[in-house]
Length: 218
Ligand code: PGA
Image (cartoon, rainbow, N blue to C red; front, side):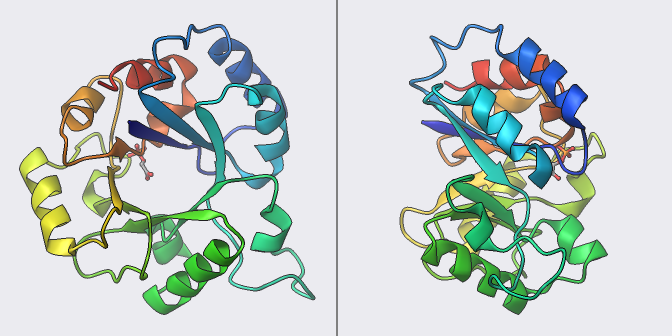
């Protein structure tokens, strides 16, 4: 079983999402559903639309890209984990764009992950390399080297696998690679038994490319 996690980042509005969904829903998933799980992570306001249209396709799950550090309460504009219960099963935490643009550090991110876990939302915890700390009992770690994000230059398989060993992941933790994963190169990563899935950003915005990546799941 391989995981494909599509991170839409801050892209798409309602009409663009409907276009994406209409194209995606025309594809044949019968050969894919037993070998992969797709976790699609739209911006918060688009989650209900995506969830509603993809409901009933059992291999597709919904995730979000971030969560507030705060619990529910007087935090205007924040989206706490409590609000996401029943909407998402997964949440990306610690993406390098959050660390870079919003100054989120390890302690802060580890708290977010714990809070999500307490509400049964599975964090997909991103690290940039071996220097980022990983929370205890995390089930998904995504290695996303900054030089590879959105640049068209993915990391080498040797490096991806050596980082996995150096991270000393908790038992049963799944290891995901992200950074310029496309429909052209996804199979290199997905065919490795050491890599449990991929996290495409840009390529997930195109339904056809995302479908091709799903087809590369062995
Ligand atoms: P990319 O983004 O596939 O566009 O490089 C991946 C990510 O940042 O999650």
